[in-house]
Amino acid sequence: MAISQLRSKKKATGGVYHKRRKQKQYELGKPHNFIKFGPVKRKKVRRMGGNTKEILLSVDIINVADEKGKAKTVKISKVKKNPANRNFVIRNIITKGTILETEIGDVIVTSRPGQQGSLNGKLIKKA
Image (cartoon, rainbow, N blue to C red; front, side, top):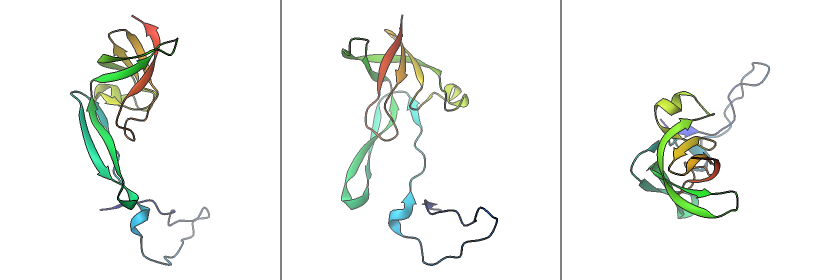
């Protein structure tokens, strides 16, 4: 079944809004994309207007910026903490704000991996 991004059918008072028209294609959404910790896999997705967007499916490297702003690519060791959902740590799911353990220390994810084709973060604690 399609994921709709229409307003709710119920009013705040408990009443019901009645349908005025059918659903439009531009109001449809996509199912949530959970990015796993594993070998790098990407997928191209068609967006509105025929544009394409590259999204991550799984990743094992991250672009890290240190205190000076110098960036380097490092390997991820494990998912340490995820403020979005504690069960994501068990399932090795990476979201924005996730704390990852890497070769050079702990890194917090600053990019949105479900929306972008790369994983970026900043160093918070050196190893």
